[in-house]
Length: 187
Image (cartoon, rainbow, N blue to C red; front, top):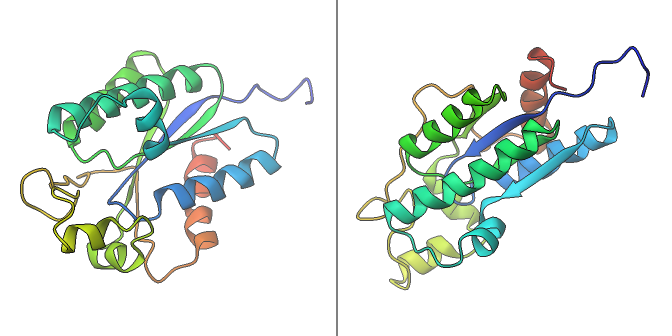
């Protein structure tokens, strides 16, 4: 690294959206691009972290909010140390996402909320984890985005970026994410 180059500033990019919307796919593709440029990046996958950080939690609103808060805490600490964090987390409730943003702002750590706004039918067609099929078969209740008790999803009203991944390439969506970071001098 050149001595006249400022050290990388950490930030959190919080990708929220329905199951199978493309959050983790986008995070991994953007991380690969950023790493190729020498940027320290960490992908926080909500499903993976739930098993590690929150195995005792269920899927009530309070439990979902607690899980989001824990992931947000980890993201904020990493970003505060210069890591670009890509958090791919369903995070269905606006208040929980807002609390993570507020925690970042209190520590002067940049936070960008990205709504991966893929329509529920496209997510159900992808169904990479078989969740929508289990919901249809009655084996799973309260799947986020399908309505009913426990299935609510509150889309961000004013995200920093809204991406619909249906009908577009991963590279195109990653270009848009990268452009957001570049515009903010974070990539």
